[in-house]
Image (cartoon, rainbow over all chains, first blue to last red; front, side, top):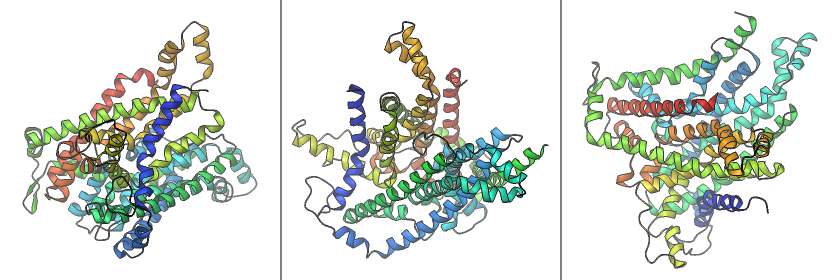
Length: 269
Length: 282
């Protein structure tokens, strides 16, 4: 067998990676409130309970709204930056791109704190879903740029030139030729940004107003042992939803790479 | 300026404006705040270094800062060292048609809610936790082990898990770029497999290792969830203090000072690290 010790190590590592993820559904279907083995018995009551928690529904709607707006904004900013950086050369390109990608390596608490200072202390505005959107867009845009850059990178520039030679305007060529070609990348980056925003806690906790986001709601529930099983059920539902969204994103990402004739390097990041 | 340059700048300007308004300007505000002081309910806007003096002299801030840097450093080393063999395995030993599957398998766990992942580590590592009950029932231990929860060890384990894909992927990408004929050439010229690894493969993979190191080290300093949930009183980090200053003590200037100091410390260490590894980045 190829690999030998490395393969054994790799499998052990996968066990380490999956350990918490496997426990999530186990405890979600466990008929008991204590998070320990042995498990008590099978129940779906925690999932049924989810349907009756109004605060949860509010938080979910709030999070979905934030994730939708964040993903839309990030993709628009991402298209601008990815297109500009792959198609054109302009002065200060490297430092500009570097500055845009900074949120990727900035500790999230710094983003949270700096926006909090500006919103609350400088402008004295109330915190709301929009302040969370502002923070999330900042950290999602670099991800959108990374995905979209690989879509734009593979484009054959002569396609666009041909369209312009044949009488299209510059905007028309972009809209009718370029956008359709990169649309899988757009869908993929939208879904990734959506998922990141939906799960983000550190920034949301600082910037959320009276209406909590889903992770902020979960955080508030973790203090109460009796609420934990329902939270596990919620986590299970969210995991399944995320996996569906990401599988769709992966499908579009691959189609996008195939469409522009590139080879797949695997993975999103 | 050429037409191309103008078009490029125009196209990128919305993104740049957004980053300037919502990142650069707020960061500048935080720096300004760090030189102001909280005077009960109002903010005293005379510029002073009082916050910095307090941050450097008060032992609690110093302890938290040093501990945060230590924990982040240990997390980084542990995560990168554990991740490298996986990236190497997938890049060099997995059949090309199955690489994407392995990468997918590695990334799936990270789409579980971050909060719940951290919480579940608490469940795993606890006194009556999954690990202890498992080891007890196997007869490997006689009584529950306690040194793995509510201390820095738990923080390291949990963060090493949280950042796994962010280290595996850059290293994997760097390994994938290595021209395999270089390795053959090295072995043809008399190097053993081990010396080939250290003299050819590892130096060529270093850009990925450096990227992975920075990707783990920098954000871990800003995490307050993991220390709060699994760290116990001796595992709290500077981000917990920043959060407390802003949200509980209502002392934004002190919080800003600590945030600035944390940011400077991380940046300085990262720059030194990159400087010492600069020969690999050419």
